[in-house]
Image 1 (cartoon, rainbow, N blue to C red):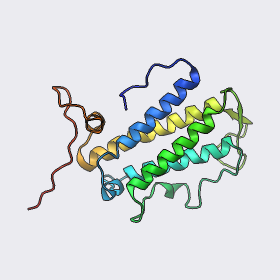
Image 2 (cartoon, rainbow, N blue to C red):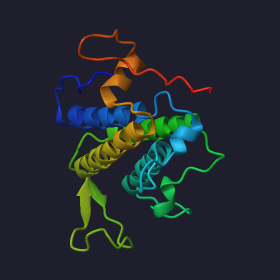
Image 3 (tube, rainbow, N blue to C red):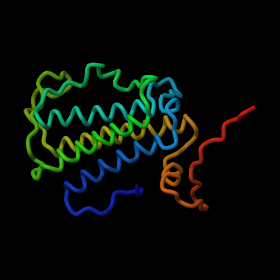
Image 4 (cartoon, rainbow, N blue to C red):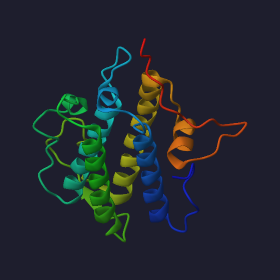
Length: 194
């Protein structure tokens, strides 16, 4: 995962490239975590790295149901509970599901040549505008970038609180960068056996 989106030639390539980049940043926050650490809350917030990944998976699938004009229910577990990771849920499976949702999103959004294609706004969602009939595919992609970037920042903070790991040190470890004067790749803490 490069630190920046590669050069782009089209608006669609740029939008989807930035969405991919933000997803990579979210996944990076889980690098080296075990299941318990992925569920760890380190602040008054209930946010966890695993919960953020679970939430973003549901967000992408929710928006693709809207794009596909299917029933767009957020899920039986409720909007607030979609951040909760149970003891039975494994980080690896959450990451795999997020990757699958992202691939589904990329196929759906990639199939539209016209970024202005209208996406009807569901009328039964109280926080959606009542004075607009449709968004565009462009708007949906921008919204997914915004939602993912917001939670990538949350995940950065939560991860740093779990074990002190920061984004570039995690990226260096994940990609096998050599240590240099300006970056030390993250290393898993050695457990205190005393």
